[in-house]
Length: 210
Image (tube, rainbow, N blue to C red; front, side, top):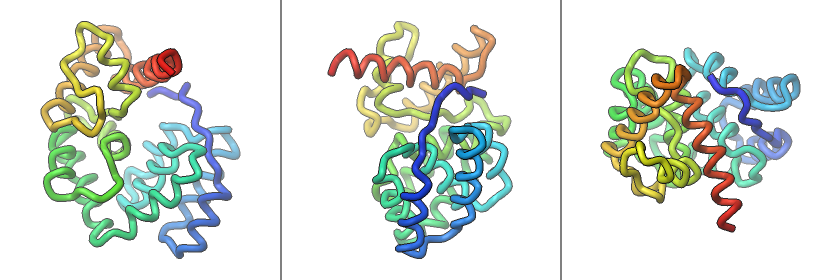
């Protein structure tokens, strides 16, 4: 488990939007605010431990809050996804399948039959990660976004992966997860630690190239 990743959050922005739109599961925001107040962040371990036996929509809301951080667009993005036809069923199916069959199964099912507007690779892989990381399937699902992609491209041992997150196929996502799993094993750490290291390096690369 990696906890160094600091996650900022603006609970008031989320609460205001939730009230205005009458969105479901506002108690998740209460739980996230309590976590943020006590820890100064939203820990990965908190989401992994709190929402495994809860409705998939609650896990999705927590994932989106964690992934959006202080971005004021986060509540509207999340609400817009939840408001789409059959959103709850599609999220539930995606979560169930990654737990039953692993990273590639969950990823493929999302893009084949559960795709939702504005829920892109960066965020759906966050959902897959939080839903399936603690299950026994290997390789474990991991987050893949533009920062991870930028960093992975610098490693000669990494598989060929798209530099743009939206170009990730099921096979390339599985290759990435398998490579991170193997790399973690070699260094006696967790695959999530490899992903976080790539994310941090990708942030540095983006700053240098800006």
